[in-house]
Amino acid sequence: MVVAYLRSDMNDDLSRKGVLVHEWLEPTGGSENVFEVMASVFPETPIVTPWNNAPGRFSPARVRETSLAQTPLRHSKPAAALALPFVWRSKALAASAEWALISSHLFAHHLRVAPDATKLVYVHTPARYIWSPELDPRGAALSARAAAAPLKWIDRKRAREASSIAANSRFVRDRVRRHWQRDAEVIYPPVAVLDVRRSADEEAWQHAADGDVVAGLPEEFLLGVSRFVSYKRLDLVIEAGVATGLPVVIAGGGPEEDAIRSLADGASVDVRIVQRPSSAVLHALYKRATALVFPAVEDFGIVPVEAMAVGTPVIGVGAGGLLETVSHEETGYLLEEFDREGLQRAVRAVRELPRDVISASADRFSDAAFRSALGGWVDSIVPQASATRA
Image 1: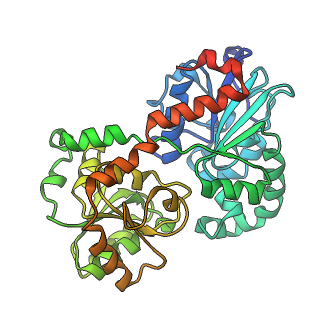
Image 2: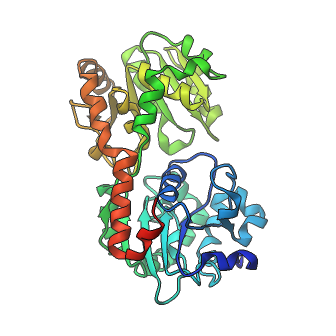
């Protein structure tokens, strides 16, 4: 068993105030981006995380790592997953905090707090590995299946410890009710719609090191943006291009890159891979695309909202978070299946959609909207937390 601790010289800094908690800190990732905004709402509150692989995100003095950071598990999330339920139960992590605000998509909500402390949980998703393996094939691994039954029991038990829960979408709220048997508020995550829009309008890509990518784009193309992992279904983005005869641009990176490149090489249309684009180039890709094709079933889906911020319509699956962010035949087109006829119909439809309407629809998911909703939720339960808010 891995025993977690905080260095004793940092433990007193938690004082009798609050602590912010996240599953782990990495350079990229949707939940990390949400947590960064969350942390900016409470800028003086210390952060606890199993490991910090993104030292540039926060002041080093603010982040407290557990002993897991000193092991190879910090570089293997699937392996670390089995240790984390034990790590979060260490008494040292938040023993002196009056309240804890936890950002959870795996087991961070298992955090042990003092008996009289308030525990607030912002849920990106109940752990897909154990609760929804149909949405994440990694849950089909033998080790994940073997651990699912006992982990479900303990996961539900820890969820009952929360003073209050907020979910990042109605889709996730419904799963919280079903899996944890708890109710939850809905607070949509922050999307940097103004920054994306400004960057695209100012054509910031011209000053980016990888700006030549934009200069060589085809006049029309379908865009796919995500990590290169199987459940993101980037193969269907390529199929959309084949079905409609449009070129395809796929932006991102990850372990399935070789498989994606193999599919691209065999496609009957031009498929370009843009590996880990800069923010400026990504924003330019959004703006120039005929449509963003987003086949994955996501809990919320930040990428579609970023695309809509610059007026680009979304073609996606009519399930999950897209049902809350994309309005069918108004800001995009939602399909039951990604078949040839449906994709052709979708592309014809989105070409006619007014881009100004699409752009305006993204504003309800802005940073400002999230900050207001999050701060109001925390203040309503922990009034003293308002003194630490930005």
